[in-house]
Length: 300
Length: 310
Image (cartoon, rainbow over all chains, first blue to last red; front, top):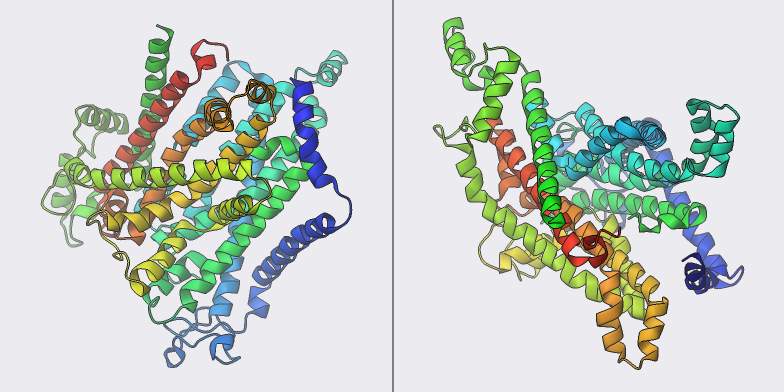
């Protein structure tokens, strides 16, 4: 089995192995462009208060639907204004900040929790492991959007709901993959050796298991960024995400929809922002996965 | 015999999932405290409040309420809507279910119908134009938000070109744009899996053997390679079906499609909580059932699993 897969793998590797020439150049471009976009996104979001040219919620009915500067507008509103005269660039930047906040809480939170559950259930096995995995199964079988609608219908739209839903929704993916890895790691000689030397479960998890699963976890975290941002936008679009009036990309698309026929920019710009940031997240995740762990190619 | 055991166990698992959903719905709903507030005007007297609390059983202990709730569900009594003079929620949902089903199936047909041929073609012509197009579609298909894509196709194909209606569910033409927007993400995922599966399998020994026997290339691909490459595809179809049913909620809102998803959103706006609750339970149950059926059929397709080898 191993022999055969190596034979199969050889030509695949050869294709990517060229150290110079166009492939090297393409690879460099393939990483530096997403990195640059990610940097712009983080800076724009983090410094939105300082950098944004206008108050994102300042309504100016005298300046409704002004086009972007490259479509006949003025530099007063570089990306134009929406149907009540709010500056779109400023709203995009504050929307980026909202996405950053959600990603910043949800991705590390669910990674930590999912990894702990996955390691515990993989290591302990037995009844604990079984129960934890049944919970994961139920979780995976249920689309989070149903839960989102439930919370939204009872508590009304809020940022808190979005974060709770995403945390509850995303941890199970980590748990499942980490558990699978730990199940094979715990049969390996180095864990047996450590156990023979008298190491306890917590020590082995920290010193032997975690370093071996951290690559997987980092890869899922990167791929999860795009999903989290898109889900926040989708929930806000449906009206069960952040409240109306908040500068969020999803809400901007809802609002842009009303004037879609007369003005392209209020709906195109937040949509493009969403598309570009998702592409960036996915490309970086793919790149990391190829680098750190090609076995995970089946993810996404 | 083994198969029937498996079928029963798998269906029982689905029942457990539905039970968990029903419990979550019940307990989350009770966190709010005052459902009677939805039903009464602000100036209601204490006596009126007390009457309605009694009628709804809100003065019983939580565990009794939970028992009543489960018992009603077992008897298929899903309660009545707060709006529209006591319409039964399950009847209203039943009317919409056909439309949601239609949309989901059409999305799946689009996703599978396009992704598998494209994935095979891309794998067989690696590095050529077909492959580039397929990979481009996969990358963008996975990154484009479905609701935004939906609005964009409405704008181009319905408003500008007038090829299709902008929304609603009248006839086959109104189904095309929603199905395309709904299925694109799944299409990308299945295509990637088919492509990588085909690439892996085309390098394996039994394909070389088949060719050495002098079989025609089409036979090698269709009979030998494809059967192998499609197995992982079948496994993700189950989860994919669930994702499509959930995704349909968003697409129904975009296209004013009269399905369950749009009913949920409308009911949220009208604070019609029983309707939301029933619709969520119905959707979750159909997803659980779909997952179970796909798992079962997977067992029928793969002879190795059928024989209990893996």
